[in-house]
Length: 608
Image 1: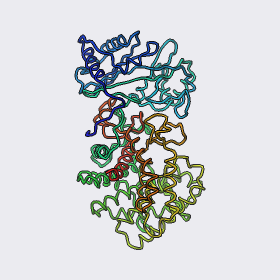
Image 2: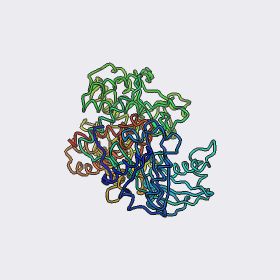
Image 3: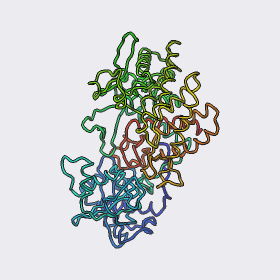
Image 4: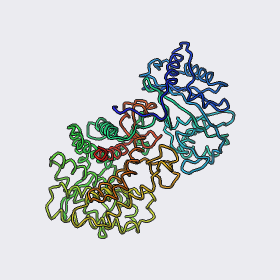
C-alpha cells in the first residue's frame, strides 16, 4: 500500500513510549510507563473500564478488561489478564510488525433502556456503531460491548447488537435466527447504559488514534485516489478464479467466502455483478495500460459467455445469460456493456455473434409501451419458462429499478462500438428512445409507490450520458431526469454542517437520521450527471455537482480497507485493497469494490 493513513488526532510521543513499555510488560519484563495524556485526561474511576486487546494474523484476538481505582492499576491488571489467556504464547508481543495492540477505555456511561435503542433516528437512545457501545447487567453478569466491537465483530444495526448480546449472555438458542434473538433480547430485563470510549491501536512502530474503531482515512487527492484505484482493481484481478470468476464475497473476520444472503449455498455467484467487475478491469486498463488487466477481463468474458442460452426464430438470433435459474434483463445489459468496452479497447471481435445476440434479446424485452421487462425467465413466474406477453401484475412482480438502465447502457455502447448494420442501429435508436420515454414519463406514475426519497437509478443516469449526442434519442426531459436525480442525491447527502458524526459527511440517507450510506453506485450517478453537464458545456450544473461529488468521494474512502484499518481481519492480505459494505460492517462483496473503483477511475482525470 503506497498511501499512508492519516490519523484522527495527533500521534504523541507519550503514546509511543507507552506502547513500548506495554510490549515489555506483555513479554514478562518489568517496565515502568508514562500514562498517555489521551487516556489520563479522560479517566473516570466510576466508569472507565479498560481493555487491552492483541491482534495478529491468523490468530483469534485476545482481550482482557479491567476497572481499577487508578488508570495505571487498570492497565497492569489488563496486561496480567491477557498474559493468562489461552493462546497467548502464539502472539509475538515484542514484534510491532507482527502483533498489534489496542487499548480502549470507557470515558462516558449514560443509563438507557435497551428496548428504546435505535440506530436510524436522532434520539438520546441512539446506538451509533463504533462510536457508542453498551454496558448491560443481567442476573449479576456484566457484559461490555465496547464501541470498537462494532468493527471487530462487524456490528452495524441494533438488531446485530442485540444478537451479539444474546450470545454474550449465553441466551441464544439453537435454531433461532438473528431477528429472533434480537426480539428475544428486547424482552430480557437488562440494566443498560450507552458508552463512549477513547481507543488507540499500534501499527508497526506507530500508534493510531481511532474514531469509530478505525484510523481516519487519508485525505482526498489525485495521488491517494490513484493508489486506491490501483489497489482495488488489483484486488479484483488478483482474486479471480481460474475459470474467470471473481471472488464474489468475503468475510475477513471469519475468513469465509459464504455470502451472508445465501448461507446455505456457499458457491453462490451473481453473473450481473460479474460483468460489472469486468467493466472495472477495463476502466483500469484504460487508465494504466496494464496488459494483465485486459487479459483478466477477457478471461472473465470467457466465463460470461458460458452462461449464455441461445435461441433463433423468425425474428432472428438471440442469446441471454441464464444463471441461478434466472435470466435478468440487467445481466444481459451489463454483459453487453462489458463486451463492448472490451471490443473498443482491444479491437478483438471474437465475441461479435454474442454481441448481436444480446442486442436482439434486449430489444425483444421492450414491450409495446416501451417498458423493459425485468426478467426473461424466473423460477417463481411462468414455471421458469420464457416470459412473453405477460400481464401488468406480472410486470410489477418483475420490476427492477436497475435493470432497464443497465440494458440501455449496453445498447448505447453497442451503437457506439458494435459492428451492427445501419438498419440494426437505427432500430436500436428508435427502441431506446421509446424505452427512455417510458422510464422518464410513465414509470414514475405507474410505479410511484416503489420510489424512495433517495434515488437509486445510477445505471439509467449513465445510460443517458452515453446516449447523449446521438440524434433522436435523448431529449431535454431525459437530461432533466439526470440532473434532477443528482440534485435529489445531493439533498439527501450529509454535509459537514449537518452530519451526525464527522465521517457521515459525503454519505447519503433516505431520511435524515439514517445510519450513513457511503455508496459507490450513487457516486457513479453523480459522476454521470457531472460528465453529461461537462460534455454539454453546462457550467452551472457542473459547479452544482462537483463540490458534493468530491465530498462523497472523501466519505467513500472511509470504507476502503488499508493495512492500518484491517487489524481485526484474520488474514489482512486477503482484504487490503477492497471496500467494505459499510463503515463497521466488514463484509466485502464484488459490487462494493466494483462501483467504488469505477467511480474513482472516472474521478481521477478530474482531480489531475
